[in-house]
Image (cartoon, rainbow, N blue to C red):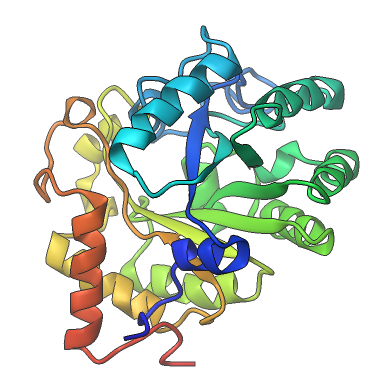
Length: 306
């Protein structure tokens, strides 16, 4: 039976003929809302150590990270034939173009690497950098992933993003115009946003020329400013049980254009980084099974309400 939502894994497999596995690379970048260029402290919810694997550390060369990551994934995903070097932590276009060329070329020099995915911020790209990525895409797979997080400027200001939604829309448009695959990240449950506001975001997201989407439920990471905010003003946060989140995400899927691929709909953070794991230690593969089951129970599918 055809899936009730547009799976990103299925998109890549149909486009390139095999499973492609991402290997996370930490190339030692920072962000402009960390180093004082536009702000200090970074995003209020962020501790990058909670979001990338142990083999990926900036003290290792890119080649060493690739080799260790491949070994890890060969044990976990035996069906992976080729790999994508995923420049993930922090803002991976936040450097002079010549430096970016060196880093991307090193990753692409590995014989088993067929492309790169570049995680970055909308205010850390320009025409010249995107032209270079478009040039790379003639011979390699290239994906640009933007952390957007919210469609509301008040939220973006509150979480210290340091950019507006208009910045994000402009960056996505510039990237898509060059024929590059574009992914956007959004967080569900940020402070000050109601369920209705989050649902309204779907129509805004639909207006962007996106290839794929990653959604994460907000997780309160120890030691972050958001942890203190959550303790002081819990009434500003919408929280979800697992069942509530599944139903809420189905509500969002029903409002999303069916051609946008869903790469992730919930996130995993190692238990040591959070005070509690309200959903238990549930893995992404089980979450996907539960989402598909809930879609069947509701006889629903991506784009149903459009």
